[in-house]
Amino acid sequence: MPEPASAPEELAGPVDDVVQPFQLHHPRPPGARISGRLVRLGPLVDGALRRHAYPAPVAQLVAELLALAGGLAATLKFEGIFSLQTQSDGPITLMVADVTDAGGMRAYARFDAAKLAAALDEGGSGAPVPGLLGKGYLAFTVDQGPDTERYQSIVALEGDTLTSCAQSYFRQSQQLDTALILAAGQRPWGDEGAFRAAALILQRLPVGPHASEDALDPWREAMLLMATCGADELLDPALTPARLLLRLFHQMGVRVTPPRSLAFACRCSRARAEAVLQRLPLDELAAFKLDGRITVTCEFCSTTHSFEEAEIDAYHAH
Image (tube, rainbow, N blue to C red):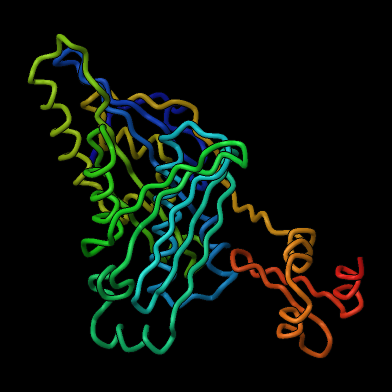
């Protein structure tokens, strides 16, 4: 798809691990406004996945969930943690991705290797939600700390893909018309086999009381243009987010605002692991001991913290 000529500075900016906000201001009719977010994940998502060595179908879904979490968090105003979680009865029983208001992201998954292999033999990756996740739910949570009420919305895992499940959430829970596409996978760009992920989200903002019915036309046009964007284009590191958006939506008057950086950031620590061990009674801790020591491994980043028996006993000496 050709793009119009533009000043180099308008097309510059970071390529990966970024959220690029933008707006579409269609010249007609007056009052039609569409807001969007483009999320591009490169080293962030590749590093997060390499910490676990997931099978490719699991890595694909975790990467999509990370991109979706980054995009949805960027549409909200919050101080704390936004998280997405799937819990289901299929081979992949749990996936979690979260992002802080500072842009720190992390994710992990739990799966049954034998059930996963059987599902893949049956072609389950062609429709990953029913084939690999099964029946369950997708939860959207905003946690702004102990002094605030946690917000959570839950929708059933309905549809073939995470995109269709998220669209179900928007239809049920959001007042704004929302459209999105997700892409993830390993591509022969840069380091061979490196994972990349992306999310493109559009939202139709409320129009003024005097806007005409024609205000829906730009929304339909934006969705048609959005549908022309394939996975290879979304993930191509040769295209900056600003250049990709200009290529897609230049005829609608796309305007980008300063991008926001994202980075892998796990909140685990030895002190947090100690706090967990201190809350458990000694008889329960004994079940976790191996050669007189307990090793705690973070499910998000795979960092391990080892505690000697003397340390553990000291926690309960008082």
